[in-house]
Image (cartoon, rainbow, N blue to C red; front, side, top):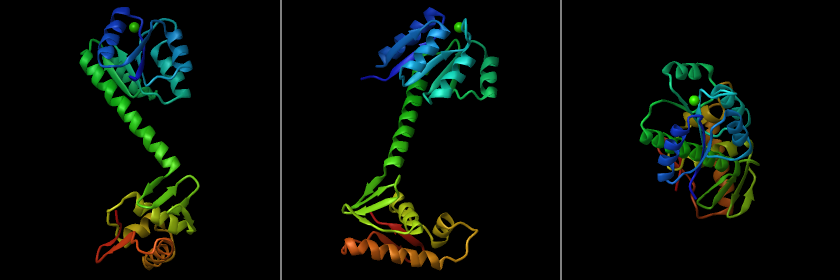
Length: 230
Ligand code: CA
């Protein structure tokens, strides 16, 4: 099923031109020619992107953008006939994702719509992943509850051990120096020194290997630091 777009635009010919190009590209399109109806529609339905004209009777695009933003983070592409208005929109920081001036090339409009939808989907996916956790090799992290499982068996880590393992496992194959790890996990304003890192890595290895004796997860890269092995 194609992504759905809401067009709020009082000039019927422009709205239809936008719709035609978007439909050719596989989008499902809904048009509202009045600002109030458009706003109500935007607030009561779920769209993947909203194309919002600035100059509308009853209620203008500035107000609509503000009201939509108060409730959700759907991408909003604002359209205006005047370059000055675009500058004004930017200045107001209403939270529109992009701006385009009339007359525009419909293909450019479609390209921007696609770019914003895929960017938004990427962000949403990342956010979901971050909330739910992730798995790597036979480890799985529940980042919401800060729990780690090896082969589905939970291991108990201290907060710092957890953060250290999470950092390494979230960046597999990347080498972190002890200094980098210390800085990232303990920060500057802390007692202790980079030897702390070595001690913690040792503890994590011990705990992991108790559950999975033949597997090495954290590899020492001599003279460089540590990395999580894929
Ligand atoms: Ca208009």
